[in-house]
Image (cartoon, rainbow, N blue to C red; front, side):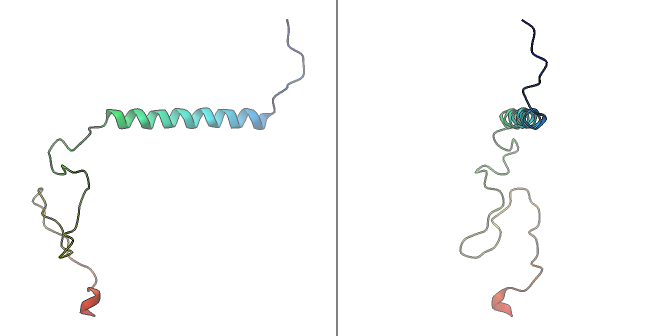
Length: 81
């Protein structure tokens, strides 16, 4: 049977639905990218996955496996002021 001549869905609803479909596609693409990404650093520089950490007692950067020099402080520590 042929459709009636009157349009039953507003442009606002069509726009919302298209944005929702687009967001779902973007989310699925990000999810797929995370699945394809390596689970850990293949070089083994960050085995625990925590990134750069500080020593809890000294506040100094933890030993780096990369062999790069540690960054220098820009501002004096609160105790030095």
